[in-house]
Image (cartoon, rainbow, N blue to C red; front, side):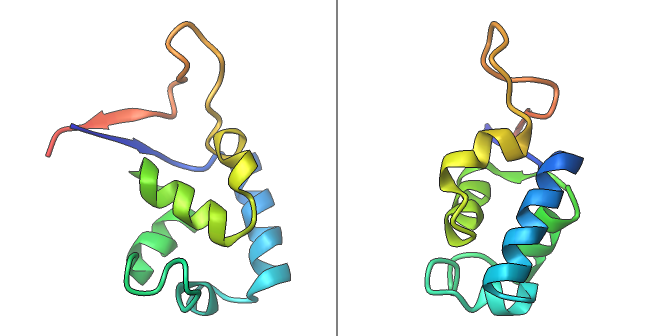
Length: 93
């Protein structure tokens, strides 16, 4: 089972600002050394449209955007009893 998460609407604002400032386009981001050969453009596109992706992929994109310390905020993960909110889902593979 894999945990998947997605960016919240507020998180998307933050990541899109970072994208524009650092790379300009998703294609340029995909060429970044941190992501090249590890994540496909479809995963990056899902991230920027608020669709669910694996947690490790989500974190890797946040690192490339220099937002590694804010990945939980971007995903809307709260401090509820289980540490997760309704934005985190377990996916069976």
